[in-house]
Image (cartoon, rainbow, N blue to C red):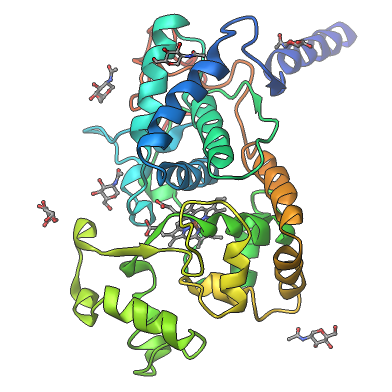
Length: 343
Ligand code: HEM
Ligand SMILES: *[C@@H]1O[C@H](CO)[C@@H](O)[C@H](O)[C@H]1NC(C)=O
Ligand SMILES: *[C@@H]1O[C@H](CO)[C@@H](O)[C@H](O)[C@H]1NC(C)=O
Ligand SMILES: *[C@@H]1O[C@H](CO)[C@@H](O)[C@H](O)[C@H]1NC(C)=O
Ligand SMILES: *[C@@H]1O[C@H](CO)[C@@H](O)[C@H](O)[C@H]1NC(C)=O
Ligand SMILES: *[C@@H]1O[C@H](CO)[C@@H](O)[C@H](O)[C@H]1NC(C)=O
Ligand SMILES: *[C@@H]1O[C@H](CO)[C@@H](O)[C@H](O)[C@H]1NC(C)=O
């Protein structure tokens, strides 16, 4: 009996030591020393050609981490047997996939089967944030790729959530109110499509009126961009978009201008505007407006937390060879069969 327990203990320790390898700074410094520099080189070429891409990647990162952890599962395409995360309604216009694919293609040539798609997304997002004027945070790597991506599991917070609803959603991922307020600062750059805030423009809460909290100028801009006829639009590609941060001449800069918009009643999304109204949120908003450097520092910290949500490490998952496709079962790089089945 004792021998059995000892064996069990040894086995547990062994399994733990194999499975609990943590993320590390420069995880690839021996296995693929050029991973970070190649990734940055390629992503920077994309950002230079299209300065809006860091915003696309930042949102993609958030969505990846929210369903089954930061495991690259948002990158997986649907197959005949499976409808992937990408197809979920809130995916609307997720973008930046081409940046990940381009980096992956080069890294597969140089270090085959070594660098995960989840890490490539995390590196490109970090470099995008820095390109957009944020701080370059110390990103740990060593994420493994997930093998499961299921549309029905996507559970993103919605733009009409209250702060407390969004907070509950964040807390389920181990993030707190400060992280929520700070990461919403990502809405200082990029786009929002009309479908995400149309409910505020014509018939807010069934009132037949616009949301009374929107400033008159912003309301006019949004009404012009989003005609009421869009209420019957179901085709995402026909949905117009506006800058998600109305209070800036630098729509692709990651900075504290978002919080100024919130104070000026110029936030496009209802949840964003709510940050101005709560006792628990307004002091932080005021602080970021007064001290932009606080925002920079805390955003970087919150990104590190975000990119470590439910990561797979060690022997978990796999290193996908093509970020859009799970490795074929039984191929040298495929996940061990003890991986949970997608049912
Ligand atoms: C708390 C809940 C959040 C909600 C409800 C929310 C909602 C939205 C919505 C509706 C859009 C517009 C998407 C489109 O029209 O294409 C958007 C865009 C964006 N979100 Fe969020 N978001 C949230 C949190 C975050 C977080 C945590 C980040 C990252 C730190 C983030 C970064 C972005 C960025 C950068 C864009 C612009 C995307 C682009 O230009 O393609 N959001 N968000
Ligand atoms: C990477 O290099 C640093 C020193 O430059 C070292 O401390 C660290 O252990 C290395 N990490 C890995 C994963 O090899
Ligand atoms: C970055 O890419 C360019 C063009 O592909 C190449 O000429 C250059 O050597 C690369 N630089 C680094 C540091 O990898
Ligand atoms: C997002 O989902 C829609 C269906 O809801 C799908 O048509 C579209 O291709 C998806 N977008 C991406 C980028 O995968
Ligand atoms: C949506 O609109 C795009 C652009 O006009 C068009 O190419 C596409 O066929 C439309 N999709 C559907 C399902 O109607
Ligand atoms: C705001 O905070 C004050 C005390 O700091 C408290 O008395 C009040 O009830 C709070 N209001 C709301 C709406 O939470
Ligand atoms: C990755 O897989 C997708 C979907 O099957 C395919 O369209 C694409 O060409 C593949 N990319 C590479 C580099 O093989």
